[in-house]
Image 1: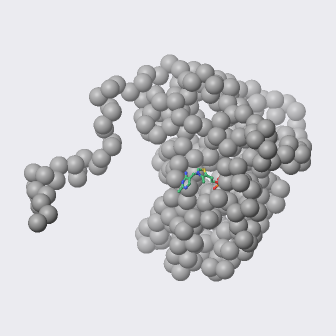
Image 2: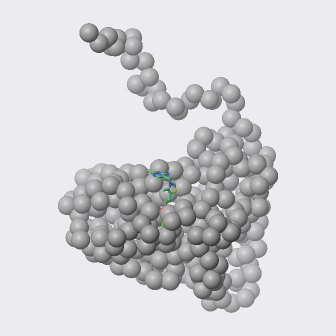
Image 3: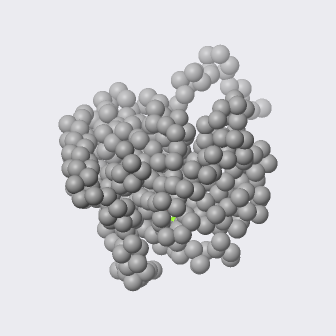
Length: 328
Ligand SMILES: Cc1ncc(C[n+]2csc(CCOP(=O)(O)OP(=O)(O)O)c2C)c(N)n1
Ligand SMILES: [Mg+2]
């Protein structure tokens, strides 16, 4: 498959899956909050298409795009949102905690910033094992305000870890714009200060992201250290949920307009011959419909599953081996 076809297939798949999830959400069939990536798909797609299947990614609660772009199983993602036992964490994690190790999707988290350190830890392990796998850490502009961001960048630069940091800068953390939160809004410049080569990638541009990732991966596989991208983008819908949020008054529809006009899904689709584009769309429509049907038909976990995987079982019975001493 040609690159443009692969990019379009992935972009269209994410857009359509999320649009359908957004329609189902108000029915309450989906048992977890959903943070849609609509408008931001180009970042995950551009980056992940330049990776190998055995490269690994970590992301955030706004992680559907990353999960799907890296090849995560769509049936298991939708079933996870429904809370069904066929979900990718057996219905226990919901939309914010997606994982598919077979596809290199190592996890997403509701806790802002956490997976930045998880990703660097994995990169350190891979470096010690002399593997040539690359790790990508996706996170938002808001996460760059967390202490773990600074600590991890310092460590990654020090140890020259095989990691690409991808800051998805959509200009907002919930309802607060970046300029009201950060004294120096150039996030890439902050990464550069740690000694990490950093690039701002403008305009939500899938092909620019693909090219930048291809070069970064090449450099890392031949022994180079971390690379940082600040990828500019825009969230079309509300922070959490399928609706719009302009009525809240913190942003204006005019701000979104140019992003909608330059929609990457439509832009990359227009690069394909009509017949090829239509065939891809038909295939994806069937796949999305089948994933929803799979989730609908799956069962909820039995009640006996309630406490499984809550604590690590090998450490769950310390009392017999080592009674806890009472404080004097
Ligand atoms: C450690 C932590 N602090 C605060 C929150 C509450 N919170 C949830 S999302 C969010 C905004 C994060 O914004 P950003 O990183 O830019 O990601 P975006 O939602 O824009 O993709 C905050 C503060 C949280 N989940 N975890
Ligand atoms: Mg943000």
